[in-house]
Amino acid sequence: MQGSPHDSPHDSPRAEPARATPDLAATGDDSEEENWAWYLYGVWRASDAEARALLDAAAAALATEPPDESPDQQPLELIASGELQALTRRVPLADFSPEAISAHGDDRAWLEQSARRHNAVVEVAQRERAILPAKFGSVYPRAEDVRAALLERHDALRDHLIWLDGCDEWAVHLYSELASLRRRAEQEQNQRQGDAGSAREQLAAASPGRAYFLRRKLADELADATERLLDDLIAQALEAFARHARAAEVTRQLSGARLSQQDHEQDQQDQGGAGVEVMLATLLVPRDAVEAFSADVAAFVQREPGLWSEQSGPWAPYSFAAVPAEPDAPDAPEGADVTEGFGGGA
Image 1 (cartoon, rainbow, N blue to C red):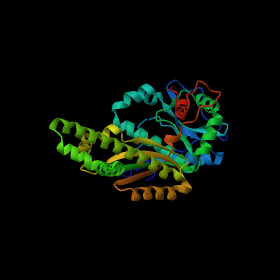
Image 2 (cartoon, rainbow, N blue to C red; image 1 turned 30 degrees about the horizontal axis):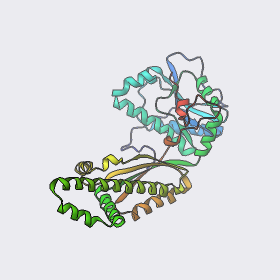
Image 3 (cartoon, rainbow, N blue to C red; image 1 turned 90 degrees about the vertical axis):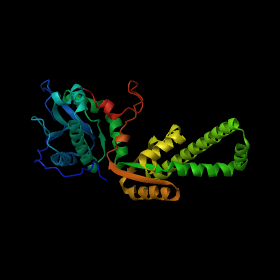
Image 4 (cartoon, rainbow, N blue to C red; image 1 turned 180 degrees about the horizontal axis):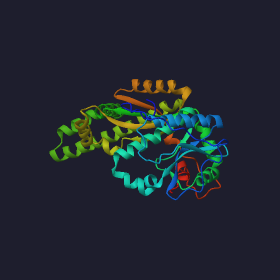
């Protein structure tokens, strides 16, 4: 699945011509009126020819989206500094200041349309070459502010883009039937302890009060065993999925609290026994390794009973856009997101 797929095609207005200065280094007018700002889509690293091709492709991608309702829609522009280019568009602050975006919070149609247009541009760039995508709504007062931000962390941004080059982000959702996990955990626990029969005999012979506490003890032990099994499976899955990835992380996993019988029964009621998501992993996968990566995912779930997966991508590397802080920049938090350095509000 490429990027953000659309359920139906939209009427395509004619694409506005993309704009770039001959040397891509002096884009924009720094004497803008106060009611304008520069909207940042992301940071790129490419030759002048590649950059111009990107502008045309991104403009064409925007033309396939619903038209921007702003009467002052401006063409895409590149603002360059050293080896880097910021992919931008001049926008009216009335629509894209932090206050204006916050005011649009209840306007779902506006937010969805604006986010789709943002993603469309980012994904076109990503198909051509790695991009550090900015957060939706990142704006700067002036072009020179964008240029200064690029210069401030130029080497770290450049090195991070080199690391990302040739890779896309993929997501793997891992699902399981919790009842199946519990049965497997109980079997493994019985094999290790060898005293399950004795515990059941004690329970059968116990007084009502003692039987209650024995049942609670057995249930707690089973819940602990199931959680350990789940943690082991998640660790094994991530290791298997990451064999051909440049980076991998667990974005979400089932917590121990949700392994209680009460939560299990609620899951089954809500999902018709279809199971629950036990892990969401995001991985940065080189394009020439996607086939091997997909084969590893399929092989893992095939050999683990009660598990199945869904895979989505390729995406721009939103989960891997954080640029490590430079040693001589103590004010920048470790692992700061690129958009914390490139999301200055106007």
